[in-house]
Amino acid sequence: MRDVVAEPVRSQRRTGLARFVRDFVKRRNAVVGGTVLLIVVLVSLFPGLVAPYDPIRMNPAVALQPPSAEHLFGTDLFGRDVFSRVVHGGGRSLQLGVVAVVIAVLLGGTLGLAAGYYSGRTDAVIMRFVDILLAFPSILLALLVVYVLGAGTLNLMIAVGISAAPGYARIVRGSTLSIREQAFVEAARALGVRDVRLILRHVTPNILAPVIVMATLGLASAILVASALSFLGFGASPPSPEWGVMLNEGRQLLTRAWWLSTFPGVAIMVTVLGCNLLGDGIQDLSDPRMYR
Image (cartoon, rainbow, N blue to C red):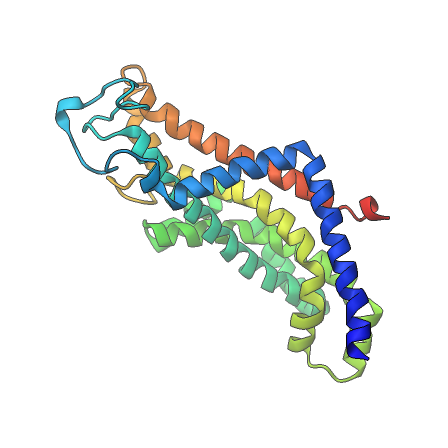
């Protein structure tokens, strides 16, 4: 009997997935963004297959050479290959962005779930705290947090995650307020299901769609903020190949060696563009009006 009931459910899921893939392929912005982001991720995961040189090995004999067949993106002040540093730096920048988004989702999602599910005084206290955090520009809040915690890659991830958490708290709270009034939640509560179990098993799965969309778009913002803070000297330390650090290293040589800052900047722009295009496409696909 259970198999008879489960089979239509599995069939419905396969149909929904097939429809999602078909609609995703039809959206050019989502396909382009996903392809760009996939290439960046693959290159960052396997930099040794792409980068021809050691990113931190110095060779003063070839310092500040412009782009050429031997050094595609030229060399820096210490003779290090800029192309190899950009390739290896992608992994660090993506790691910063992804970990920061995970921290923001966990922190903001927990606050939003608590505020939306319990409402009342709990909601008022949490959301007033969130409103205070939202009063600060994200990069200023991240700068304040990293100043308190100290410079370093881990502290930078935490700072960027905390600065982005208020946005997730608001969207999760709004979705939770809607879901908690649904009949299946009321039925589970009437059956004596504990709050923690009810939130994890019934509420959370039904609010994931807007969170995924926001996380995809938030990855772009996290990479930008992390790169900006690394540029200011609060992230990875030289000679670490990180895009924000590379921008800082080349800023004083813009007129003499334009390639030092140009190529890391282009890498950030392409990655952020890919995230935004993919996020916009997923946001369109998550619109329930498409599947009516």
